[in-house]
Image (cartoon, rainbow, N blue to C red; front, side, top):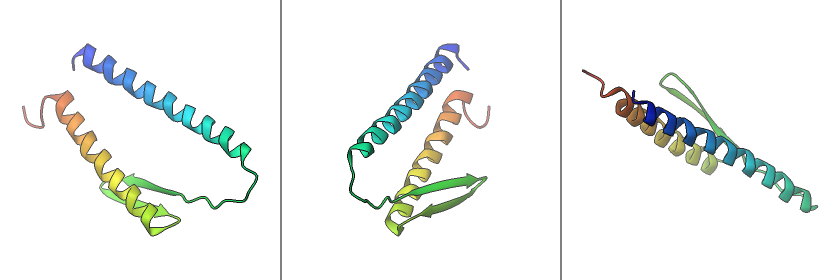
Length: 89
């Protein structure tokens, strides 16, 4: 793999992690301002091999997380093919 591509992808990953941390901090600050009781919806996907395990507090949230998991899986396969030069050499 080209060192420049590796460093670029590493930098992008680190930036995304810091943006995620920033969003968490901002949401905590914003939630401190609210005193009313609100309902929080949640959802997530755990992928073990080829089997996705989807959970959520509502069906709509579970479907959204499943679609996001499919998109991320396709993106990871694309990046694998891009960085290794293809599946068959």
